[in-house]
Length: 380
Image 1 (tube, rainbow, N blue to C red):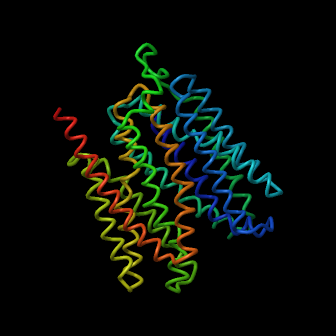
Image 2: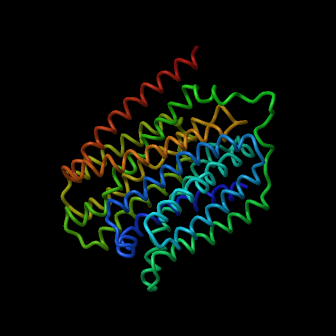
Image 3: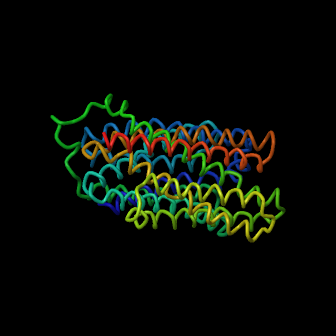
């Protein structure tokens, strides 16, 4: 079953990764502006916000085989309908529909995995996010291969729909744990929503989007526009960044043998802040490219470790907690692309990186305060 959960996260993040590389072709095909095309990300994030929250909450209460299978089917169908859209309005509607019904596959898969293997939480969550990063890496590769083959942007979505229907077949045949544990001992959702540890982990998960999107959003454009590299070479910077993320998430279980999650985050995020400062001021382009990898290496553990911390106290209701955490991540997906895009438009891409450095300092201070508070609670 853990491999089904890994595959579910791989598929969903691959779907997310298809949108960006497909935008230029969509703009040309439908004759729309880039600002209108950008609303696709808003529709995607809005659908994911409600889908992951609702999917996580109900996964503790209803038949998971039905729910998981339904979401996998909706994702596959939504990809086909999106690929067949002939107008802008239908594109937006099907994007929202696909995200609303399909986005829960990741959180439901994680919930099932955590309920079946609670003792392997610290190992499996980083592995799950590793497969998610791998999906993000594969998406632009699929788009590029279709372009080389002379196929339209629609084929990337059609092909990914087959992968979603493969997930459907796995969801129908997989082994499932009992839903939600003991009903008599089930904690009310209201209490989970008011749990300070869950909410704090959720807020940090939202902020984890800032150090990811804040760096990678304009990465290729920075190397192409600001540094004058050819677009193909500049685009490689995103793959280098994802390679750093993937390496970090594979290594996180090893790090946890020697230090706690918050200590690891303090070290890794401090490392990324130093790398970011070097990245800003080192003029040698090959060195900048290498620094991109090390930046990804530092921020890679942020998201999986926050999920680990947020869900560890609710092993019988991991779906509700996961739904809350993933919905906060969706909010970050709505806020930070707009924020950093606005800063870059009115100032420069370099300014977004300076703002990001200040965000790093604030996150590190907040992590230190949270670590002290948890330490005091343990002593009490």
